[in-house]
Amino acid sequence: MFETVLPTIGLHGAYMTPETLALVEGNTSKMSELIKSLKEANSKLEILQSEIDQNQHKVLFYDTIANVNDTISVGCLAGVLNANGYTTGQNRLFADLRRLKHVIKRPGSRYNEPTQQATDGGFLKTVQYLIEPDSGKVRLGKSTRVTRKGQEYYLDLFLGTTLNI
Image 1 (cartoon, rainbow, N blue to C red):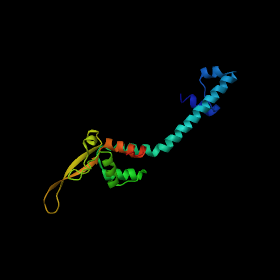
Image 2: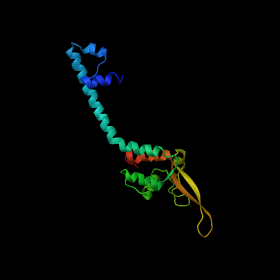
Image 3: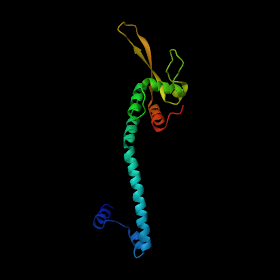
């Protein structure tokens, strides 16, 4: 193909298969149809290329998120959202998650922990860790983390649509 098509395009500015050439040879109406069809195809390609160019930053961003195999903090997700046009911070994002019923809003030891709905959906999870201050008294700490699936979901929710709560 490269040996035939590209040199022909370079030499004549176009390439037609023998069948197409036979169809349009001596038939101006068929040639006009072919030219119109090519113009329409080129117009559609230009529109698609424009959309690709406009969405390139989103593609790179989502590819980056898709390659994350671990969880991130809610604060980190807030930073990513903020950098991409959704004005928020960690506290505001927790408030949004409470309105969505994805984290517990009842004050107490489980405040801002994932609800069963968010855990079952695979969006959020609780990570426990040990805190060992200088006093030597070890205690257990908890952190709400956003899974990879949750990152994709919340990015689409907050950046792709408006928050209707």
